[in-house]
Image 1 (spheres, rainbow, N blue to C red):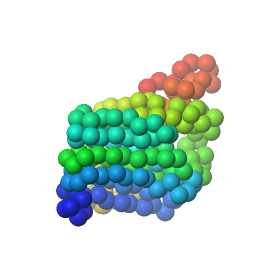
Image 2: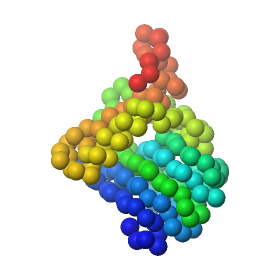
Image 3: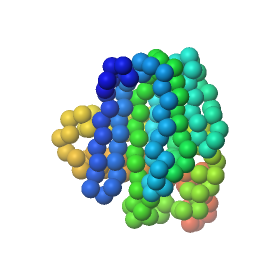
Image 4: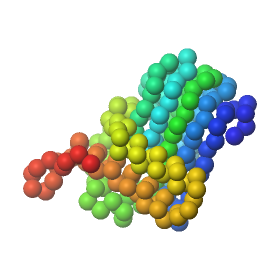
Length: 192
């Protein structure tokens, strides 16, 4: 990473089935406004963010700007590649992020009963409230930390792919549990 932009690093890994991950760990060194690529509507981006925000920090999603200035900000949320999404900050914000790019056609074939198009639409209709829908808990932290270690060493790429798939499955499972009807027997799906 160029030091005038930030101090730290980022790493990208692409998989044969279309999944892609971007891991970032850096402190920005200048005024920063990042508009994520909204040119195509062919994928979803699952963001797992841990940010120590600078004096001015905001996230713009679905036309609503949310401010997290001078706060520790963490979130787990999904955006469609075609919707407006932007992060703005002054110098000094620290970013520890995992972004998983998921092709839209990947979901039905790889998530089985965890994927439900209607539930996904309900989730997307939450608009900016998505930033508060799921939380980074100890399970997410363990998965992401293990993923970071594996990506840095790249000893066994199928293991990295498996971990990415587990993170996606967990996110969609929790979405289904909160917005869906639960299990087929009428009971609620347990915490995963």
